[in-house]
Image (cartoon, rainbow, N blue to C red; front, side, top):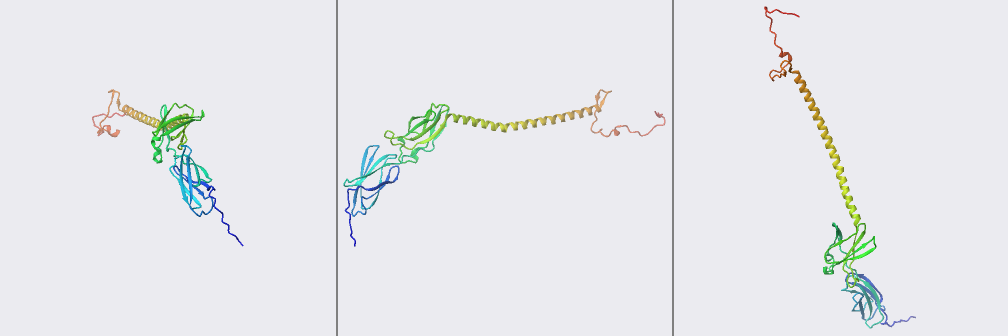
Length: 294
């Protein structure tokens, strides 16, 4: 034996298992289940969205017969905070949850350029990748001094650069740049952070200069030494050749010196020859010239 029992639907029950499926910068997808399984008729839900920052409310109506309901809430603020309430249209018990939308991205390519008495912060325009960002909103810059453990607000700008002065030697700083916060700092963009060591930067620069000087010296000194050695060897060779030529000329001049004339006698090229050729040729003896034999 068996009996069929049909439960009477209770429209005073709240929606079940309300949760967030996906959250973006300007939307949120939420999901819930009907108060009871397999509704036999369309059910009207009221979705109330309360902006916790702006203190405003919006109500959306959803009519469906599905046991599982998925709904997308649109036109939200990036980085906003919301309280979502879902209940049946007859103002039955409610289910609620809180949603925080994704904030605007951090500016890209944050870098520092060091000048004589100040530094310049540079970054890319956030409007290049965020369609929901207007340049008129601007950016705000903060600085954290790790030595003093102090965070300071430096200012706001609508440009893509910012000048920072009066930095102290030996202090480590952290700079953050983000889309300007709205509504008393409750809706802000993600910050881009960059570390800066004022003393270390100068030391690194000096070390780099010293390293470059050392490298140049390591190349120039051996080259100069080789040049000096080459020049020294060249002078020695020239000096030896000069002495050799001088000695040869002196010996040659002495061999042709005539003490009777007091000068050296040099023959022309045509008269040069063997010493035997310079002596007079003996052709014969005359009978009337006596021959003396010593």
